[in-house]
Length: 87
Image (spheres, helix red, strand yellow):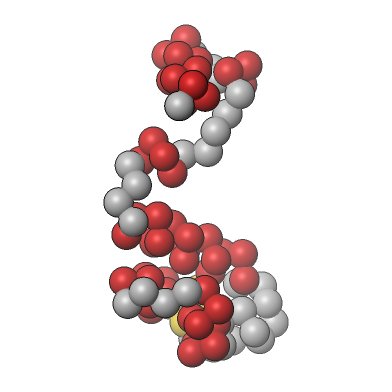
């Protein structure tokens, strides 16, 4: 999918850059992503961060956002959140 329509940069190109070991600033320099209108900046960075997390071998639980125990909707979620907090 095209993430940056100004510079025609796809999510695959971002993920490929992560596999090649590029940092965010280098990706921006090479592709000019998020330098046109800027609308894609957050989404592009999010794709970059997710690809980086996936390539670093983190488990799915480590990539999930942390929620307070009070915001969990089920007892199981509350237990999981308490376990994450204690790590």
